[in-house]
Image 1 (cartoon, chains in turn orange, red):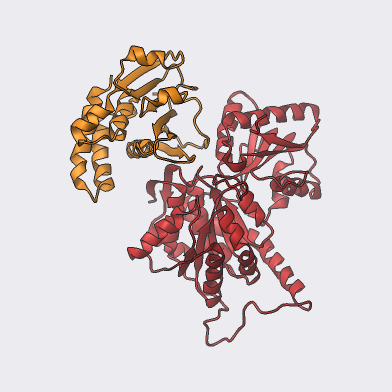
Image 2 (tube, helix red, strand yellow):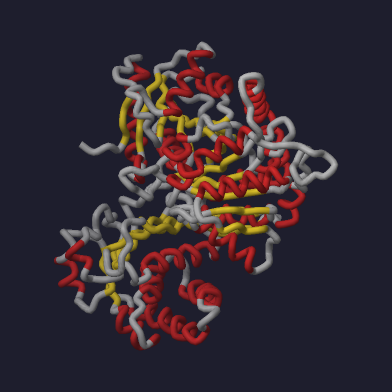
Length: 190
Length: 393
């Protein structure tokens, strides 16, 4: 695995892309990595396109700019494909992970000639089946871990159990659902 | 053993304040420093600190409350950004002239207008002549470390000046990164108990603070302030040495990154220094002798030491994240070139204004500056020294 991995998240305000990027940073941190997790702050409003970033490395990270040539891109909402150039700068050696019900062929035509790998997951289905509500960020977190191989499935599941306990200390009833969402998402990404 | 953690810059600052456990914190929320008093007020509510938290109605009152608290003989801290600092302006000068070692966490943001909540250094640069010790921090770790060292510097009898620790708004304040925390008891021991020599609530010594000070004395008092600022340099180095003994992390007046054998170098502050290190490494791989001088102590300005560190170079670029709008150059450029001239160091030097209002500073931008420096080093021709980096059009 190359040393510095850069990930860009595209989502809409309220979908939890920022939270997902921070959870990924957390999980990678817990496997001993150096991490950065930061959102690009603009005028934040529910539904507006937002961007968040991760850097993950075995060595200290000093660079403090946004990410322009990511190794991976995560798209939390496929309606963004029309609004945002999500593959801008994306390395052809990397991959894009999209939350969609469309097939890869249809998606491929929407990516401005991007030649790298495309992965899809129906995060709505995963979320509805496991949580009963639509929270795409937990399935997308599992999807990018699976695609990038930043850590093993077991490392992610073990770590997130602890994180969810902490994050949902006041509503423990959602922990099990979120764990199931991770497990199902790991199997569903293709 | 230190504690391996991952925190945002704001969390790091709040944790440092928790470990310092000051007598008084008075603050008013403003983006991007809001989280610092927010987190700290949780520590107060949960009883993990015994600080008196004063939720004031404005920044003017925040600094006034800190002035009152320090004058009374207690240890006071605050946090703010941009227009919050502007609103403190009057009390900023009162704090330093009353020689009150207040410690502030300044999360740098553009001063309006037009209104902008993102990072540049126009807030800090607006108070650079206000008599505060000013430390700049590349990342969450340095923001934390500088705060742990702050009271020992500010409260030193030879200094007795307020001190601000700066970090870049959003870029480091809202980015989660690795950090090494120091154990609570070690910080407590390092910072020590505050024993002011003169204070208002001392019934054994009746004193007045902040009275009218006219022609016969004000000049001498200002001279004393200037001396205190000059004294701060050695005190900062002493405290940094003790800090290094505790943590192994070495801090000086500035950091020299691959500067020793460098031919071309950038001088800058805060998070941009981190991105510059990345670029320096890339250029070194290509055999280009690039270096960096990262300012940590901006006030007092270590003029002689900086001039000496830059003396062997062939070309220098000073990056300013605020514009003085004086038709000449930014504040850091003016200070650096003045330091060089006075110390007879003549190296072609140019200024780049950059990152205004949160314009992202890319590694590519910095690389272009080094390319410009290579040309200047070859020809010795500076042409226009007042330039821009990352400006459109």
